[in-house]
Length: 460
Image 1 (tube, one colour):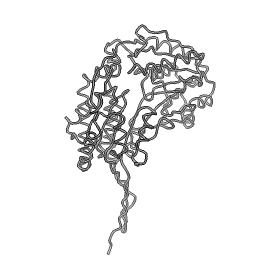
Image 2 (image 1 turned 120 degrees about the horizontal axis):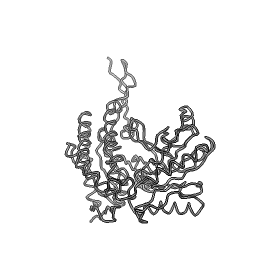
Image 3 (image 1 turned 90 degrees about the vertical axis):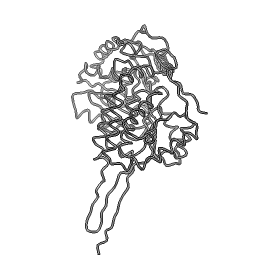
Image 4 (image 1 turned 180 degrees about the horizontal axis):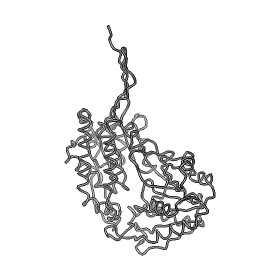
């Protein structure tokens, strides 16, 4: 018998959905069916695979009216923001658009004696372990290109967003993707680790916590199974003295607070040049004080509960520890703050890097703001982190932004924007954020393996 997975709604603490996990034998059987289906799927013409995947994407769009309130119930995002289909469709569409070029043979040379080229071969079975914070967009990052490249896919979604994998499988199957080509499964941690250790998968893509990524790598140790990881983040923003302050405040504070701060590349610390610090802080406080914390099913709510009480507790602990160490909390407790999942968004000043709120991932609606006097001071502080996903630089000087960006230990450098995933660029990180790369042509390279052909012709 398997275990019961319960999605606890952050709206009211009730059990919103439950599913039973597969035991090991049942899980092995499901994965075996997916493996059997892979060669026939890879043999289909590329355009046919693209068309089927995009039909599945469109089918998700047709479900959006049901998906939006479902997400509010499962992880607390306000319905006013309309769900994730825009980004979901953008990412899949871009990967479909570049597929032929990205997967084309690399021609090395041909003459009267030799023909040489490199093919991109699908790994086989790709295992996608997706997180709850942007459950559709993070899943499609790998699901779409993996299927288009000729892999079959097993999707395991987070318990907090228990129904997302089911919806995706339902949509893709209805669009014509065979059931054994794309399969959603419910697994506990032990069964997941056992399958990876048994080499059930040919590539594993995991998005989640540092501890979860370490568990994936431990399970895969010695199997030579590729593991791609996107783990924690502590993404900084840096506002230079020539920045557009209004634009910087609007984008960086939204990047820190949107989705209750539960964004992979959310802004968690901000460094502002001393000449703009007072103005930036005043405007930032006005933005956050204008938020409406409340039930995500209500149209007037602009910030909902965190996805789980335990996530909110970690953020509260970081804030209270920082205040005890001398930080100043500027936002008064909001009426809807219940001490549980509903958490007042917070701006902290007088913070230092000795405080956990400036070091550990918060993954919640809190941001610390520090004053700096130079690029070198800002660079040192931005790099003073175990994580490296994105950094956001605010300036009118493109060359200066590039020069600073070259010195920051991060996967993506933004200038005058933040908290956005461009599918034409590789989504990647460094340090404890993990390794690998999704989307772009590099995403296809990571979901396939190179196979070289060195063919000598018979000439006489």
